[in-house]
Length: 176
Image 1 (cartoon, helix red, strand yellow):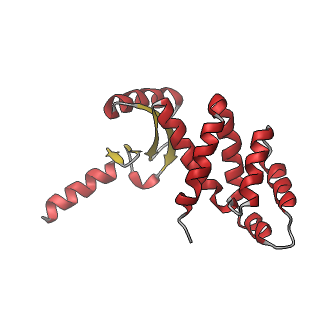
Image 2 (tube, rainbow, N blue to C red):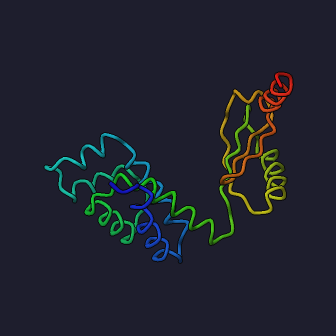
């Protein structure tokens, strides 16, 4: 079986080309479809030979609860008819990458031991954009094991200023 990324790439590229006029709205419904399609029960229902494509499409649309246009319905129909519902998560991820590249933005995940309020996040984001020399679309995730500080992942680059990382560095220096 082909890799999911290989299967998803043509769908993401075609959707990107077709929706250049409204990438934001497309990303919203695509992420919603991907979230629905990640449910194991839905995938099991979709793989049932007694379930029709129309039933699967109707189920996804009813659970997604987002405003969809005819392009969204047509895209979902194509994905379901080709048996690629399990690739929707990867399609959404690749679409996001294409959108970010076009807009000159990179996704960043900020891991923090504590919640970061709006003003502190804005200040941190400004520093990170300067450090990584690009515009960042940041999301914050709580990781209590960091003890303090932050760990930032931008693509394959990592900036780790956490207390845990410093303790690990000190441990390595003492053991060596």
